[in-house]
Image (cartoon, rainbow, N blue to C red; front, side):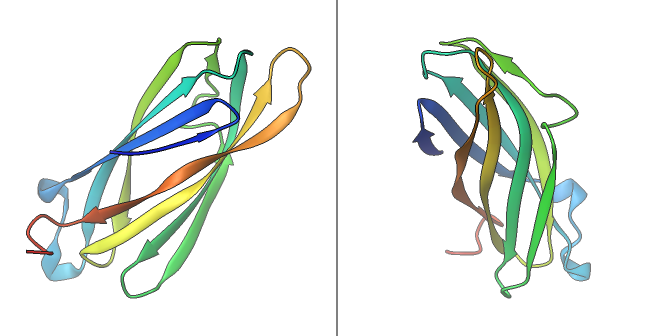
Length: 128
């Protein structure tokens, strides 16, 4: 698990290779990732947007940006945790993702960015 804290918002990531959805002979590798966001900022916040960087081991790079996560813009009171699972397709057996969430402090609508820690996605056995 990889974790980073920005302005009292803790973001942790776990990854899981999905062999039943992958097709290595076609250079198609699918990973799921579980994100846990914990609000220890002292204020209620809402996750407004996400911005991801996805990098394959062949150095190809793409960006994914949009509102909320998995169709939601979750509200987190101080001390609350929000979890979701999503996925990523890679063209190589190893890749990484990192990015930011745009959060809004509910009390005054102030916007701020929270870093999503860089995490690796590796087909099991690839680094052995």
